[in-house]
Length: 225
Image (cartoon, rainbow, N blue to C red):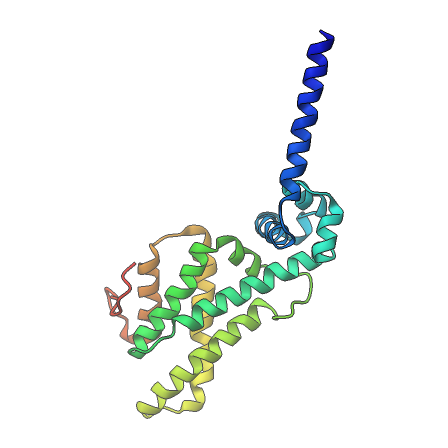
């Protein structure tokens, strides 16, 4: 019996040592990435106030000081998570605005936001919450304004070619991007209709206006889903 206990004790000690070894094999960069992913998931589910450093550390299998060492605390971790998501969304939207018919550009922008919501749902949930701390990249509202600035240039050229006042392009850009962003917040939870159909209806309203709505809006670009 004593030998069995000793064997179990030795086995448990060996298992503990293996777990510690596995933890120490993670590089500083890998640990930082792990903490960011865990924090992102928890902040999306519980919000900033509902998430604790203790929970983040427990999920990562580390002590609280490790979190402080990498980010200086919960606020620092949250700030990095938000900044990364804002840059990701801005890059996806601005990167989608490639050459094409202006209506197709509207489709591309709508798809980019919906793609982000679909692929990075946790990130979008974090962004649309009111941030409890200042961000180096600003707020979600400022991010939408940055995207609108990209759309503004496209609308300005279109307005000028059609004989409209290009000075009104910023107003329309804010209206269009705001419409897509708010619809995206709604679609975040309902996920109906399908993404392509949502994009088609958004562009239908944006392109034709209420008086010229198509009864069955269609997509003219290469994206169909």
